[in-house]
Structures are given as structure tokens and as C-alpha cells.
Length: 173
Image 1 (cartoon, rainbow, N blue to C red):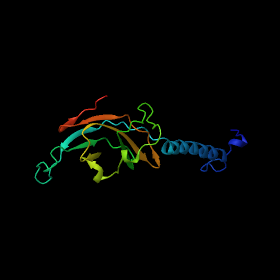
Image 2 (tube, rainbow, N blue to C red):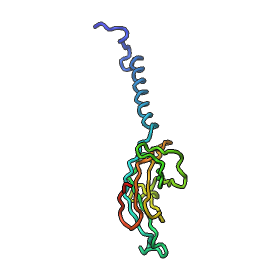
Image 3 (cartoon, rainbow, N blue to C red):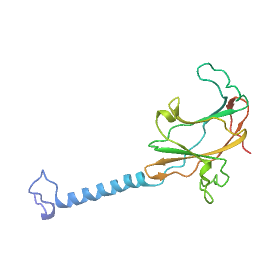
Image 4 (cartoon, one colour):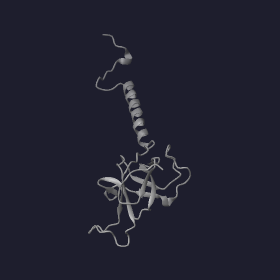
């Protein structure tokens, strides 16, 4: 059989220079795709937490703490975000656009609640916020997540009426 010089490989166990160049190019392209996904934008979290209001109780006895009968704590628990390094909840932030997740201007520091990752920040294995002495009335929350060095956009808001103990449902105001 006749072979063309450019296809002749005197060492069939070794890749040709052309094949190696193609392989390198393909690997570089695939790496770019994966790295681009890893360092690209972080998906906006879907924030639909389980929410409850509880009385302030003594852990050992379950009795209501004397003098705190009118106080309430809110518990928000949501599904973990893959590779999350930290979460933030924005409380009563009125300058976050629900459509885009972008803040219009600066967010006041005292409105942001930082929540770490790990067992001390979990309830039943999921990330959560337990907030004693939560303000009574409607409370609005947005969530964002830190992955690597990138923050996601803020989630759509959730409104909860902190009043009587029990399970809460989001209320559109």
C-alpha cells in the first residue's frame, strides 16, 4: 500500500505532531469551558425556606423565658447551595430588585446578616438562621451565596409575619 508522507508515522505508538497539537487544542478548549464555569457568575439562589416563629424558651425545661413572653424568634432554613462558603440574608432591604437580584445603591451594613457554613450554622443538616428577638410584624428577607470569590445576586424576597408561634408562609405585600 502507498502512504503519503504526512500520514506516515515511523513510531505508531507515539502520537504524531499534528495529533498532539489537536489534542492540546481540545484539552485547552475543554479546560476553558470548565474554568469559565468555575469562575463565572454564581447562579442566583432559589430562596424558599421553611420558616417558623417560636417563643423564647429555656432549653432544659421548655418553659417560656420570664420577662420575654412577648418576644419571638424566627427560624429560616433553606437547602444548601453547592460549594457555598458563606451566605448572607438581607433583612428589610427595599433596594433589591426582585427581577434582577441587583441592589440599587448601597445596602446598609446593619441589614446584612452573615451566615457561615458548617454544623454550627445548620438546623437539621440545612443552612439556617435562628434570630432571637426578631422584630414583630412583617419581615422581608433576600438571600445570596458566596462561592469562591464571587457573590451571587440576591434572591427574590420572602415576607414573613412574625407574630404567633407556628409555621410561616410567604406573604406577597
